[in-house]
Amino acid sequence: MSTDPVRFVTACRVCGSERWQQVVSFGKVPLANGFLDADGSHEDEEAYPLEVISCRTCRLLSLTAVVDPQVLYRTYSYVTSGSETMARHLRTVVRLCGKRVDLAGGGLVVELGSNTGDQLLAFRAAGARILGVDPARNLAAIAVDRGVPTLPEYFDSATARAVADEHGKAALILGRHVFAHIDDVADVLAGVRELLAEDGLFTIEVPYAVDLVEQLAFDTIYHEHLSYFLISTLDALFARHGLRTVDVERLPVHGGSVLVSAAPAEGPWRTHDRVRALIEQERAAGYLDDAVYDAFAARVRTTCTDLSRLVRGLVADGHRIAAYGASAKGTTLLNICGLGRTELEFCTDTTPQKQGRLTPGTRIPVVAPEDVTRPPDHYLLLAWNYAEEILRKESAFLEGGGRFIIPVPEPTVRGEAVVSR
Ligand code: TYD
Ligand code: ZN
Image (cartoon, rainbow, N blue to C red):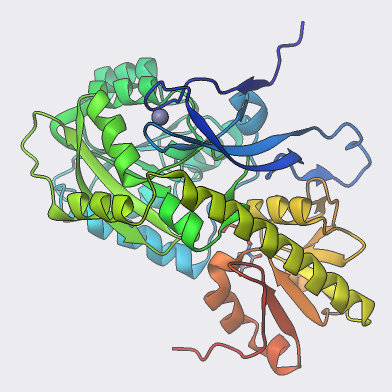
């Protein structure tokens, strides 16, 4: 018997309300990291509804369709990028957490969705004891080989209890770009309460809903991202589970993210003024009302039309175009803007797990940068979150007359190399 791989959301995962505003619907889209083997075994590629709704009670932005995590994550081709931008960011996270938690004293840092262990290695370098939890067995195995102890499990209340029994309470529980992937947030937060020391911190990094709307980063909408959070929404969620938001920082990664820390409600932490200020700013800017989300949907439609027109126009004028960076975002962008092999010759990407495969839905061959023999006239930058680093790296391409098309917030063509600092 096969079980249905999709659950449709009825009650809000944060507040339980069923009063929803429809925001955008992109139709059926394949899984963003579902890269296909090039041997023809992809004929049965599945696509799932991709639409966003907003809770009129707590203003959680949520997908309507929750794809079974077994389908999404058991083998996972996403690996934390080894880029210099990301390496710098991982060190920033250690520095920001280290200001609050005593890492050098050997406190336990548990990371959810620890991937291949890069972030935890940076914590160990600062003196912490480390433990990863990641359900993707292929990635957990790589982390273990690199010396990062990793449980190949989902983090839930049962896992949390087992970890606390074996390793003691955690000084820091960290989840970078993982919390928005979780459907049963209540059980995860129950686990956090089990495992977290009374003076410990639960720190998550999530895409910020305000940046999603302002930067028009609509391509970061894909099936893995079930939730898009305001600070107001997270604050309400934490409060329901005995936690209190104590600090928040805005960060320029993945198109705009926030690093939010919460602590046991009755614990010793004081709430930073930034938290109340940002919550007030969200209210004042209209994020608790429908209009902002309706306007967002209209701007998404315009950008999609403009991008398809720009790319098709260039192709019609005889230009050769390829994609740069087989990001998960790229899957959404290409599929919903209707760009594929007719327009894009290939897609270059540095990730070995993606090379030699085909992009989901659009089936564009992914090639290693060193295997590109004839660079195109234009690259469509699907990894626009690394625009600065990539334009600096590709100065030879740019000096030779090559151009980058940056798709969001509105399509722009960039020709100048970024001067190295
Ligand atoms: P990533 O930023 O990890 O985002 P997403 O969450 O949307 O997948 O994706 C960036 C992709 O771009 C990743 O597959 C690596 C690739 N990439 C390059 O090919 N060259 C580069 O110089 C950089 C920085 C990334
Ligand atoms: Zn809600």
